[in-house]
Length: 150
Image: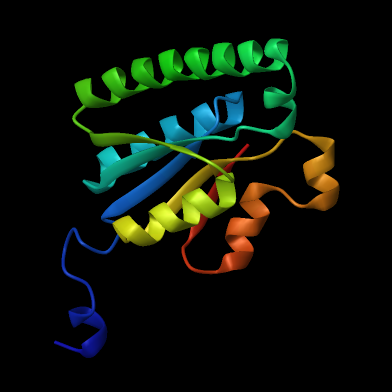
């Protein structure tokens, strides 16, 4: 057997731990669904992280705090539906929630769990297209393969 043939064992040449980052947006939920399918096909472990980005405006007023809480609750419901469906299809899945800057929290968590791949949704925000989205920042970090789902 050559060194090339020896490099990969059957069934272990793909990612063993996939991290999907969600924020409740339509693209992030599609990214999580894609990651669940990838994990099922690869026999990988799937970890989903939801980072609650408590912005300055949410704390500035009572209405902002209520809106932020309602958004987080709706996201949690969507995630629980996705988790139930993924588990029914045989995907080993763990959901973790963190609070803070999404880029910082995702990269810290990916390092903690020794993620082999990251899956995120594309940003639809014009501001992100001009300044740089989370997905672009993760790709530029160059520590993991990053799949960006539109």
